[in-house]
Length: 405
Image 1 (cartoon, rainbow, N blue to C red):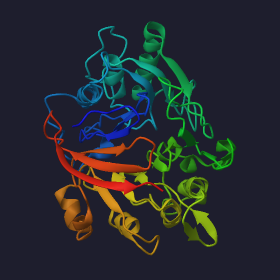
Image 2: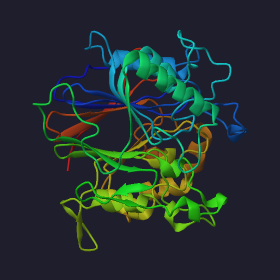
Image 3: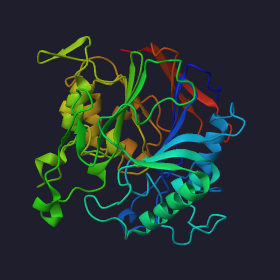
Image 4: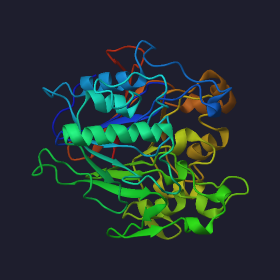
C-alpha cells in the first residue's frame, strides 16, 4: 500500500468481515475514523445467518485489526492518532459488541470491543455521535449494555486523555474540519447531512425535522437505529463522497412514509450545479457513494440514485443477505441514471453471488479493503483494492483515474 502524501484525500474502507470501519486522511493530514464495528455473532438477531470469514484472520479481534491497519496507514506519523472519531449509530457492526466476556482496558473502566478497543490504543481528540450527552432519542438507550460500556469509555477518555465529545449536528460544515494545516487546501468540506431524522435542506445550514414527534407515535412506529444514522458528504474541489450509515429509502411493509430518509437527503445532495438534467433540475450528486445499510433491500431508492448519480458505489458487505437482488438491480439500472458505474464490495459471499448473478460479473471487486485516493485539488481519483488476507495489504487492482464532477 503506497503511503498517503500531503494534498491527497485518502478514504480507507477497512474490511474485518465483522462490520464497518472507514479511515479518512484529509489533505492536510487530519485523521478521522467513522465507525469501528465488532459484530456479535451470538446475538439472536444473527442466528442462522452466514457471515464472511474474519479478515485477515481470527488471531486478533476486529478492534485490534482496525488499529493495526490505521497504524500502517498513518506510518508517516511518529505517533499515530485520530483527530476525530464518529459513530453513525449504535448497532454492533458499527460500534461494538456486548461487553460480556470481553477483555478489560488496563484501567479496568470499560471492556475492549470495537470502537472502545481502537480508542484505547489510539488517542482520539474529538468524538461525535448521534446521542451525546443523554442517549435518550428516540427512546432511552442507557440500559443497553453496549451503550453502558461505550459511555464508560467516553467518561474515562474525557477524564484521562482530554477527549472532547460532541453531538453530531446536521447542517453544519464546521464541526468536522481540517485541523493540522488550516492555510492549505481550502476547497475541502465535510457537510453534516443527517442524524436522528433531522436532515440538511441543502441551503446554508438550515435543517428540517423529517420524523414526526416521538410522542405522537405508536411504540411499533418509533424510528429504529438505522433510520437515525449519521450521514455526511465530503467534498474536495470537484470531488464529492457520501456515506450514510444504515439509512433506508423504502419503508418496511406496512410502515410509514417518513421511514424513507434517503429522499430528503437526496434532495439536498442532488441540487448542485452540474452537467446532468433531471426533470428540469440541474443535478450533479456525488462521485462516490457508500451504499446505505450494506446493500439491504430497503436502501438506495430510485429517487436517491437518480439524484446522486454515483460513478462509483462501495458496498461494505459481510453477510449472506448483503447485497439484495432488488438493490443490485437498482444501483446497476441505467434507466435511473445513464452512464457507467463501477461497484466495489468488501465481501460478497458465494451464496449471494449465485443469487444476484450475473450482476456480480460487473463488480470490480467482491472482496478486499477499498481505498479511494483523491488527487491534490480533487480533480481525479482512483479506487484501489487491497488484499485483506495479509497484513501487508498489497494492491490487488487499481481502477481509474476517474474524473471528478
